[in-house]
Image (cartoon, rainbow, N blue to C red; front, side, top):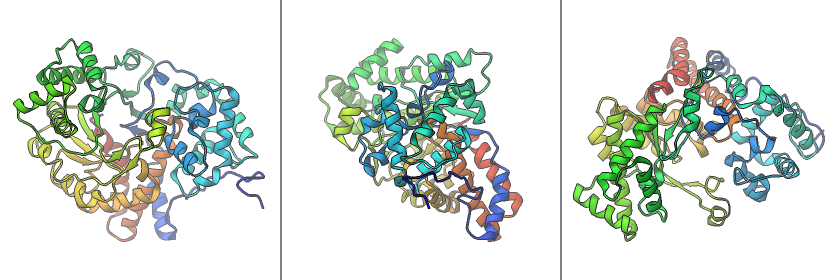
Length: 478
């Protein structure tokens, strides 16, 4: 008998993975899943660099493609395996020698047992098996073999970004972009007659809406330079934001994305907003006032959305860069973010009260705080026609949490006030596996409703198809 760390245990994918153990429900689930397994992937929120597709840049090695960008994986290797993040190529873009790349991949395989029961293991197994034809389980003994097999495939034209994009059957994907980005990669794709898929930029102004940040004035100055608008007043700042949002829309954007400490969006009077903005520009604003101004600015982002039609996505409730030393050494987005409890009912009332029934305004809210889905978000989405409950994300986009999400949300909001799956990934090759996991769990949930005679089979199949294709296209105006 082989162990996960020695020998050559086979790597297999069971066709019924994640399906219910009950044979009756499992058979129904299979039938539903078969109707959606091959449908195009709609990925309306993610972080894959547009340059990969615009320039069709070849991937250089297995580590920089599969491991380094995936902070889900890095955080577990760091926490359970005791691996230093620098050993994994973090931060993204740092130079690694071939031997460093190979050693990082060995760390993944040597510590394979720490991924048992996690979505990370599910994603990697499907990537290895389906995409790279790997048939041995990762371990210390098989690490180099797997690395060499993947590296050989990455050297072929079939594994360049555009070829993989087609192979993954992606119907649409979104990137995440700084408000001052020139979006040259998106412009290049839009002008390319050989490119026929939707790659949408996403307007992400978080840092520009945080007057308490140490670099906020620098960012604001840059906003003024890029737009040619005087940003010394709040009215000028708002006009600059309007200008950049329009620029993004002209380059294919369909949404803006916002993540802050809370979901607050209370408005200030125009006079008070200008006064606090002046303090922020002078660098004398107190944090409590900076938060009040930020909430007002978020409200104005919603107001701008009623004008330009960009879908507004909001996902607060994350303690960013919890490990200060890691943040100082490696920067943001390396796995050190932690969820915390958040309130939405009172916080969102100013936006929903002002714009909740305005034609064309659409707000997608998702969070890592599971407790609010049935208590707050689903009941509000069940009433406000603008509001959609976003899919489980990050810490709760694993199988059991997705099932809990469906059970929490469906009774209060139904299926058609949810967003469709949001993969939120920087790990390009994991996109099909992440969507497959969600499709299997949604099929299992629907299969349970059929088995309990709460839905007819034709309704379950139609709903499954809508969750995968119709809903994300509708919610994100694709």
